[in-house]
Length: 227
Image 1 (tube, one colour):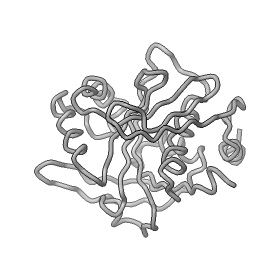
Image 2 (cartoon, helix red, strand yellow):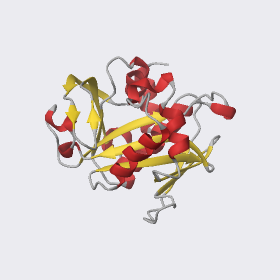
Image 3 (cartoon, one colour):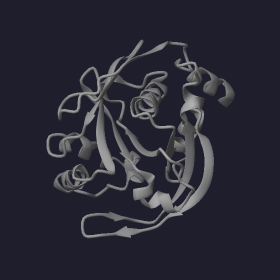
Image 4 (tube, helix red, strand yellow):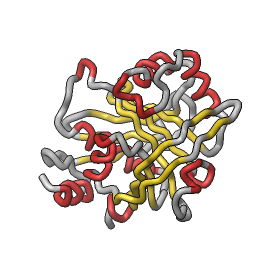
């Protein structure tokens, strides 16, 4: 399957590997513990996105970020309480948000959104009005096992949430340039590659982020959801 065909299937709102249709259901309730977005994906179930609860979800998230496969997330070696503290700090910000994605009630991915103008990435490319940044960590397969089209279903849900649900014109991602699997996943889903940049180190009392060489990539709403 070519990248071009992958993009055409994604534009059509279909699972690019087996042609299953995606259907959206939006729920913009803003109460903690409820979904801010829901999406039914045929063959998988109902995806729900809700605000991350720093304390209640700490065990799950700590388990994910502690795995070697999540080394690029930058939290390897942190304790459960340190992870909870990071997300408790983020919960107090207006510009950065952490969300948990669930499939039929089971946690399956961590999504972080941010305003590029209020993030270190904003100094590395020409930010356009309405841009939104995204970090994505997909949970290990677990008992469900690996499933064909799984990453496409998740990526389609997240793209729908930020571009349609949040009414943003463009999303930017900045995976570590060494994380070839993540970079390839974004490009398969229609993201256009941008420049390779050096994200500067941030060393603050509440936040430390090491310098990172990142591959920027962009997805416009009219590309993902034409018409």
